[in-house]
Image: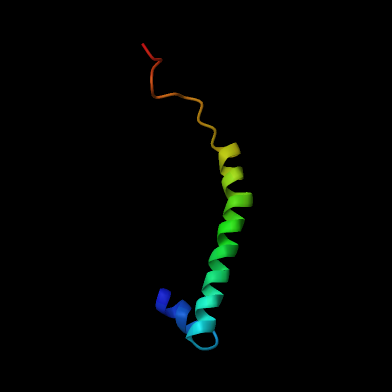
Length: 54
């Protein structure tokens, strides 16, 4: 999979690395801004697994 992604990117190695870094940054921002908050609101876990302190 990574080899196919690497071959599909245009330009020399330096440009490919910059494109991959930008794609990674965009993915992390999208996850942080929209996906993780949605998951936190959707999958609420109110059940505690640890008992009260003695």
